[in-house]
Image 1: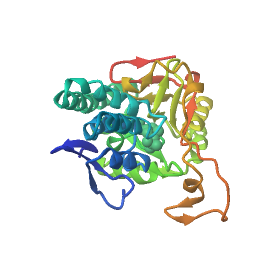
Image 2 (image 1 turned 120 degrees about the vertical axis):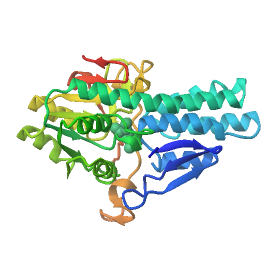
Image 3 (image 1 turned 180 degrees about the vertical axis):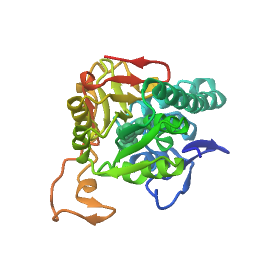
Image 4 (image 1 turned 45 degrees about the vertical axis):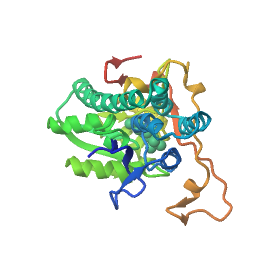
Length: 316
Ligand SMILES: CSC[C@H]1O[C@H](OP(=O)(O)O)[C@H](O)[C@@H]1O
């Protein structure tokens, strides 16, 4: 199943806001529809956003000034994952050469992601030692965060295919519950053993000794290795460091941003109070309760054991 693809002149993508209850494919035909899908996380995950950005350039239409405005809006739809802007730029750079050149560039971004995810799965599984591995992970980093297979959960899938996976402990990942809704759905489809845990249980279970490695994805890796990822990643990194458990980031080379010197310069998306004080439209906190909602945090490079990409393993 492909999370996102170019089909008969439009983007088709799985609407992840409806999972795990319904698997619905949306047909996206305008930049406005795509920006909306990105903003409400119908399509999400750094690699998938890179592909969405590249394919989205093909949807831009009108006078040159209108095309430029649409491309700028697409590029800025979410700030933290470097892949979105990178994907837009890969395709937009070909606009002077015509639509066929843009299409070729966008399809190359898609096809490169397919190859990258398979390579990361192999490289990550090769890096880990042991035949009955217990893996902890946060958010969703499977095929739903890419075109297929994904990053950290792609390593899990490869471990499972090799018969080396004992269990996955998946953090539910408040507030949008990518772990509870999406990672469990993907692990069940794989037939991989797993249990869901509350986010705050992660560091405690690491301290208890039930985890062989923490595998996470990334939205932007700064030049010094500081890594922005879903909120809760930093807490796991602290817990892993204290427990002596390897903390491994799995991300394609396209998530590394040499233009950002360190984690301090990464723009962390704040998604507003509603996602914190309500859940699926039901209010959790008293009317008028204020909230802080950083969607990502930054793990300093010195808490990261290794970064596995499609081309190499990077150690501090
Ligand atoms: C494979 S990278 C996926 C990455 O994106 C997620 O964020 P979001 O669900 O808000 O797009 C999370 O940070 C994952 O690690």
